[in-house]
Length: 276
Image 1 (cartoon, rainbow, N blue to C red):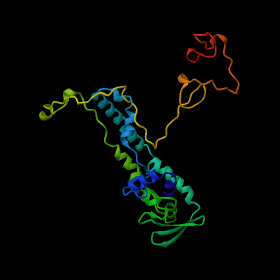
Image 2: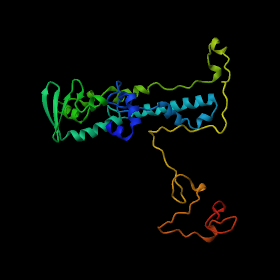
Image 3: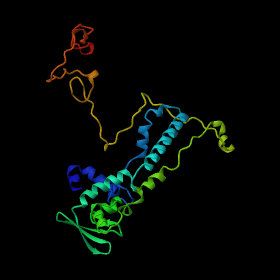
Image 4: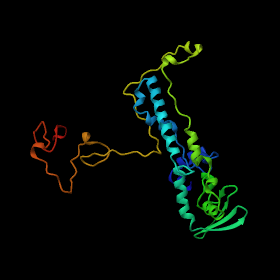
């Protein structure tokens, strides 16, 4: 935070006013499970990029079909997993297992251990599922120090993981399928609902072409457009007014009849848009 204050005082004040629980996983009161803040609406919005132009009923059916496929594929993928943990959690455990092989474990008290490695020392409590490195209680997944103590006491490491990382939890999350709604003639609509008269919303269409894309957040990575002709960023080949970049490699010989000609001066090497 001191480096942030030296770099930008306004950003430092904004982060302090928001509170550490808004941008730090360590100070967050809820369980984060190794996840940062993700807006689900933004993820769905990218999937509906082209479907947003459809009529309302067609859009609703498109969303239902999309969720139906998602639930089926994820449920089938969860059932095909061979471990008690999910594949993502199992890979994290394997990385921690590679580190715990060089650690020394000493017993302090019942279920409390001291782990030493490369001159550093940590304290692990298997009963409370805590470690002084704070990764165990922050991710609810055993760290390398906890895995070293579990191997010393012959404890199943899956019992130290939260239910969120287990295969059965993932199967239960997608166990309820998304069913089709059927034909409108088979719907049973209550009389009070059918009596509603829904009018078009009052809105004034703004001038200009409506915006199709979304506003990109400052934390997202953006790609810079570059020109294929001159190699400079900020424009494309259609709006390029710079000379073409010189290719130092071996050039490809283009037959004379296939060379580009200008329709104004009938010279080769450029077109009418870049004609001098």
